Image 1: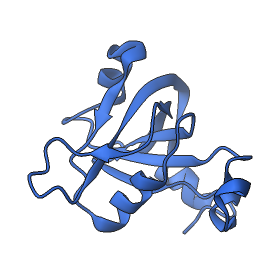
Image 2: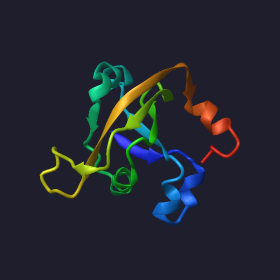
Image 3: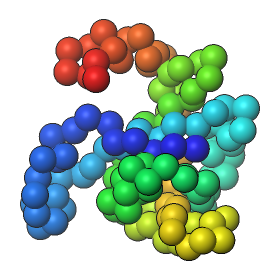
Image 4: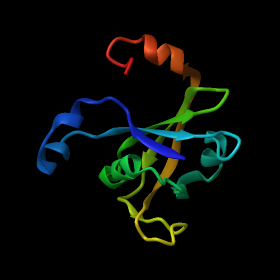
Length: 131
């Protein structure tokens, strides 16, 4: 599982006070054969722990997540598409699967499934999202 930020205007806001006025949006990447949006949705309101992130940059993004932030859930592999929305339930905490204590996890719950998933090709074709 990987967490990368979705392009958003708040990425350039320098102060936490200014950031709190705008909700952040994040991209959560997952291999659907390992953990799918449907499995996240099945967890219901209690949500699931988004853990196992071992990329330092992605872990830094997890640390920036705040309660109420919106996530786009992206299926990697053969699908390569955003399939649903999720909500961050709280700030980052120590990843229970990380014995080193260096990495963090967040709790998220599923929002709506997209009626028409957005493919990677469509994202790259959209002005301002190609990178």
